[in-house]
Image (cartoon, rainbow, N blue to C red; front, side):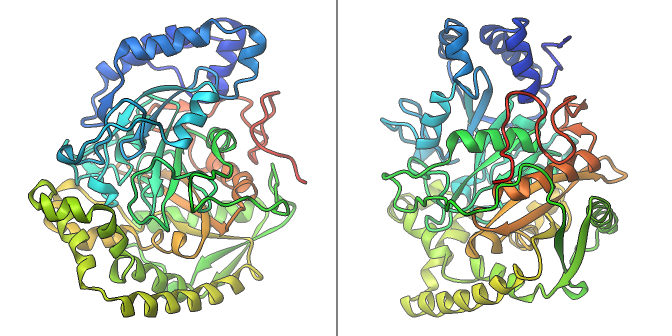
Length: 489
């Protein structure tokens, strides 16, 4: 197969085929990526790139492996990036705040697992400071701009990770997701964002935002790629007190089920914040799921909307304060004003507030649990609209809140979610939708998500590369020997 080092796709299927055929070796790929990064027009993606000699050394070690050893590594030679709130031993973690920077002695569990799977780490990416924001502009390293139009935001807080994938600089990237930080930038960059169930991917070595809600998220070009990374990184971790074991009885479809029901927010709660193009694109996603065999069911979205308001309007912001309280007390000027305003908002809540809000959340969880007797999956816009950098600068808090309308409730309600591309507005900016389900349904949702992605967006990220031939049967089931999705069990 022919592959261009400057513009060729970095999806897993393509790279694995090149490695198997001997047309590509990891050191060659590292050289190509280095040139891509130098040519890239998108600003402020990276906070820290690994020294080139270290990346080359990784690649040479992989190239020296025997064919059998290579086959045993599910992510052999696959380049990736991590958000700079995940630790990498011997390299700085800034969490988007230079004065807070520290150098860990061990890597985050997920980073270690990726190394063991043969993945190639390129560097650490920009983010909203202390992972506080959905906009991608709250960084002293500069805002991440949308690769489709630099006047628009890239979304956050995993902004650099999303743009690195969309721009074709890495095959996948790790982010984090507490309020939508992995899904919102996926929607704005025409890529896939997997928000796994809480506790399935270890958060050991991840600097916390809201520790009880935080998830490591996966940003990738395709659903198949994201699921391959999920399979390589999930699993119980005794070093993480929030780690959970996946039940053996979960649905594990590797393709679209024969029949599924998908929920839609009731009209009173379907909010596009004045963006008529987003409304049109969302209806197209609804029509596509019906064409794929789904039955649409209108649901009462009120309990989910009320839950979403708890995240920043309730005492969970105290967890953000707990994570950086000592640093905030000693060096308040080191934080960006908007970051400090959000985090210091936690000081106004009492222990009574915490428990009263917890009781409300438990009531909402009971109501939402009943939904899954009526539907198999919930379809929502990933966001209701997109904003320019100038708009966010003028109204940083209100517009950030708008972006979380369809995302903030997911972690509080212990759900999992796939954000997938859903076509483009007339101005060339992408729009995304999200498929949401109960905890531990990542694989079940993956088949539907992959089918929707292939039908609704013909290119990967901002690369203009098409979906790889043979990457699936239309419902996410790979047709190659390197199966990354499970068959029904």
